[in-house]
Amino acid sequence: MRILLIGGGGREHAIAWKIVQSPLCDKLYCAPGNAGIAEVAELVPMAATDVDGLVAWAVEHSIGFVVVAPDDPLALGMVDACQAAGLRAFGPTKAAAEIEWSKVFSKDLMKRHGIPTAAYETFSECGEAAAYAKAQNPSQEKPLVIKADGLALGKGVVIVHSAAEAEDTLRDMMEGGRFAAAGRRVVIEEYLQGREVTVLCFTDGWTVYPMPASRDHKRAYDGDKGPNTGGMGVVTPVPDYTPELAARCMKEIFIPTVDAMRWEGRLFKGVLYFGLMLTPDGSREAVSPKVIEFNARFGDPEAQAVLPLLESDLLEIMRAVEENWLDAVKPEWTDAACACVVVASGGYPGDYRKGLPITGLNESGQLARSRPSPDPDVRRGAAPLVFHAGTARDADGRLITSGGRVLAVCAKGKAPKEALERVYGEIDKIRFDGAFYRRDIGASPL
Image (cartoon, rainbow, N blue to C red; front, side):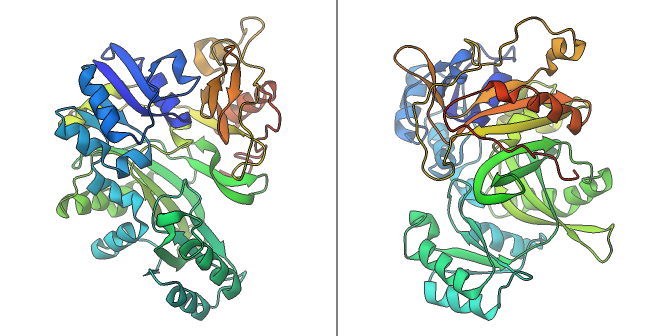
């Protein structure tokens, strides 16, 4: 098949890297792509949100399968438009993707169907929201969580510790236009204590196959300090996500969510992301999983850590999802760990410069090695992979920065500690002005 992949970040590079390994892939195109994706696919210089233009291009170029990876085109109905044009596409419809693009919808869905989540209220008027927040008496010991209803690049969640902070945040979101239309409605919910874990699931709306659990690090700086980002690093698997807990999540959260979407006429087909909090449940050892958020696609950088562990053909799984025969496919995963650390531009997630030359990578955009490694694990592919996110080529063909999260360095190992050692043993080779990364990914007990 001729494949068109929509998107241009690190997640899309990981997906592209995996798709081209499939014998089902005749040629891969990517819109708009990046410098790393250009090594494995032909780039199409069109925005991922140009729904009509991309559908027309796919029809004109006889594309056999469209993979819609980012949240924005899913929310705009890219899959619906593909289907209307007779194109096969991987990803949820606009109605199904609302589980991500509206926090209000997802919270109400969970309430209707008894799926465990934090207590909450929703508001579309700033004064009412501020009065409610004040009545909750937020403090350092009892904070509140304020979430913009719509898509906000992973930055629409703010934890507040006082009524004044809550009011400022609400005015910034609802009246100040911080997140434009995405912040006009908000969800205010209780702060859940515990440990976060992410589980991505393949589903065709009936069958559900979880991927290895991972743990993301969203704060910009070491020690979980600084502003929230789209994600600065991730490690998989997560030892405290035990087989017993996995079975409980499958029974109480994953299957009920997929069933709820189907019963409400929003059959979800694609990758469903479950952001979970493992909350204390009466004793030090017991935990109760609750849903923090849903995403309607692969997470970023979770995809970069999880996909290197997939031994099965990703494109075959995607076809099975689109054609409703996922129950006939059993995804196989290697018994290993993977770690991913993001190298970001100075100033991210705020303002940052673009067009900065990147050094330390070879012509293919990967880490250069002066000589073959004597380590057999490295020769078998355990050497770090570099997935590109915010990269481009200048007029002279030099690799330059073009985004906030620039690169993701990923490596496998027998355990998370070994995978992290491989990443941190190589990541300093990558340099550009203002580059930074967290040095404590996976440092807290996993």
